[in-house]
Length: 84
Image (cartoon, rainbow, N blue to C red; front, side):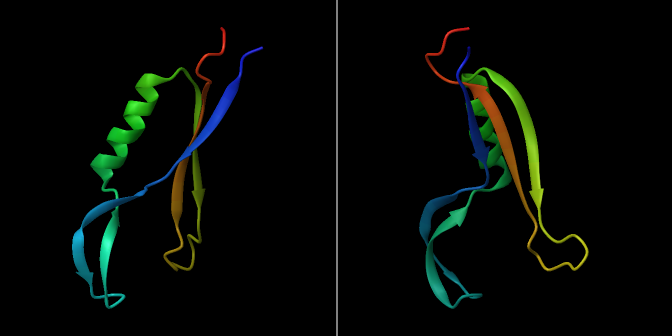
């Protein structure tokens, strides 16, 4: 029996030069990945592993427009070192 692992991808915070964030009135040293950085990270993972399934995970309030919408990607893949 094969050993299957699960990984959930979402945008991560990355280090950046300090910048002023007027929304929170403070200096930030991290920001969320942009679309290109996120896609490159996911693509590197997908190329390096045997993938069994990819499932989008969407959560949030679509009707009220509250801004609580999030999306993630659930990936089932072959664990490194497991036999076929």
